[in-house]
Amino acid sequence: MENKILDVLIVGAGLSGIGAAVHLTKKCPGKSFAIVEARERLGGTWDLFRYPGIRSDSDMYTLGYNFKPWTARRAIADAPSILEYLNETVDEYGLQDKILFNHKVIDANWSSEEALWTVSLQCGDGSIDTVKCNFLHMCSGYYSYEEGHNPDFPGKADFAGPIVHPQFWPEDLDYSGKKVVVIGSGATAVTLIPSMAETAEHVTMLQRSPTYIVSRPGEDKWALRFRKFLPAKLAYLLTRWKNVLMGIFMFNLARKKPAAFKGRLLEMVREEMGPDVDMTNFTPSYNPWDQRLCLVPDSDLFDSIKSGKASIVTDHVETFTKNGIKLKSGKTLEADVIVTATGLKMLTGGSATISVDGKLVKFGDKINYKGVMFSGIPNFGMTMGYTNASWTLKADLTSEYVCRLINYMDKNGTPIATPTLPADGLIGTEPMLDFSSGYVQRAIKNLPKQGDRKPWRLNQNFPKDIINLRHKAVDDGVMVFSKPGAVIASLPKKQLEAETIAAE
Image 1: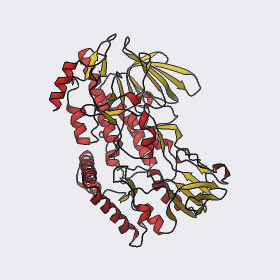
Image 2: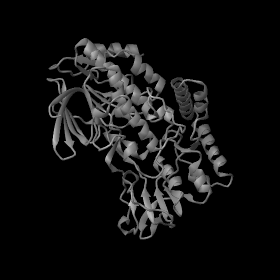
Image 3: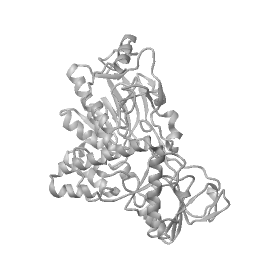
Image 4: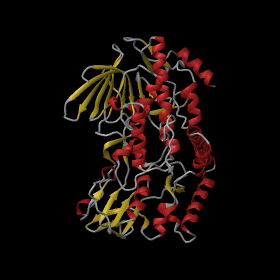
């Protein structure tokens, strides 16, 4: 592919990248594009993670694409089912020849003179390939594939058994009949524990602080009813909107009445575990949706604990020992296997170096534009899903907006589109993600910001983003369209004043 010029280069062949390719095929017919994937297989997260029990933590009626109904029975699906869905999508839209596996983006440099990105790709054999494109769409997710968050616990070298991070699960790990300690209390931990408890002697979840855990049926009874009487697409659409609106209602309720919402979540735990449950292990110190809720299908985690096959300990690690973990309380947890479900390492733009006209982009200095692009970076889109709803809801809208933008540039003969800040910089900023989760806080200084007004502010709301990304004018006075060689510095002050009045 050396020196080939494409209209669009999509980075990542996971849920986002495959969806972006389909939207491009449908809405920008005739545009040349390719998907580059660093790994040897498609699927992204759903192929990378191989730990026991891996499944979605959102329902598949919203995690599925808007153009392809989810037809399997289970709403909370395992990774093989999701991979099957992705492979079906690739086959249905003829994308097999568009994906270049073992091609990792090393760097990308935008040239305003050419109106092109020059992208360097490291191939599987170690060689470097180069491709040019007018638009670069990053669909590589928000975390490092090469490195997870792995705290340097004291005494790790002393432990006699295997220490495993879920992101790098060994195929030959045998934990049957053994004592397992899983460090962590997030989505990965609550997924792992009931699955491992089926064959392990005992599994202990060691958490520094509790997480809100909510049980949900693995099958959606309304979806199955709709399917009996309605065409597949209509049944999918109704189920999708039912779940979207319920999710928005619950999120808003949690934010408006956190104490009452918290009380109800804890009461649901008591209903699951019985009146004698020690609620210390289930009562977080923060309000609901300050971090993501952990979803467990069909009460599987609660059932594992009630059966005696699993347990929860809330404490801090003092040191690993030869036979387990010594806690700061003085207690010791015996273990044959330790799983460090301690989280991800967040990245913006993958591990690639991004430059604009030779100047290195520091994403921590950039401001989000409509949740799709960033201030001062031309022809560059990035898919980032919702924190309070399914990833793919936002991924679909992001891809649709990118297609609208490309078509607008074509129609008007302006091949460059740059989200541009006002000249006097009178925009307040705050973190793009307002979660207190450790994986967010560890990366916060390197993540883009959001502004204090539209279109620089995130909605985190699917219906609002439908209006914002699918229907509002592409030429909004903030997106500056230009031709090769033009220098875009900032919006004139007069334009800023007009936008401020309009916003008020």
